[in-house]
Image (cartoon, rainbow, N blue to C red; front, side, top):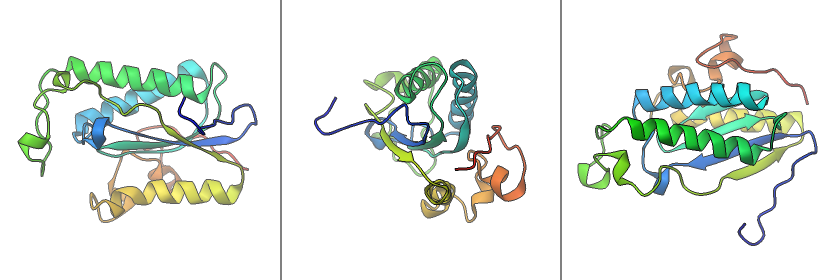
Amino acid sequence: MPKGLKRYYGQGQLHFVTFSCYRRLPLLGRVKARNLFVKELGRVRREYGFLLVGYVVMPNHVHVLMSEPKKGTPSTVLQMLKQRVSRGMRKDKKLATPKGQLPLLFPKFIADLPQFWQPRFYDFNVYSHEKKKEKLEYMHANPVVRGLVKHPKDWPWSSFSFYAKDEKGLMEIDVIDL
């Protein structure tokens, strides 16, 4: 573990985690890739028993607001999630260059990359209702800030539709009051 990095588990708090694709490449730039990520997130959620309070899948990174799992720790959950998405993506041998990317900057095949994800992840303990709201607003605004859509409602790979329209969206969200 890098010097000075501490994880605080076992306190019953939510965890706002962020992790990125290898070298911040848009490896989740395709609809198919983001859908695979959401599918695996649901699968890992069921197996490890954590509550999902919010999420957004961006082309080159992901934010998740989650509880601690019944089985393992947030670290083990993310390890499993990253592994499964990476394996699923590597099974898809052909990877088209996402729109707007220069072919020289983006690998033709994911299998040509040494890894799919950057090592590690950023973890912030969410300890109050105000922090929960702040993190949800931040993640839901992300696609707008990055210029992917004009409004968060137009980005289906997030929990925005649950909070704004009380709709399920692509993934069921757990309501938690802090």
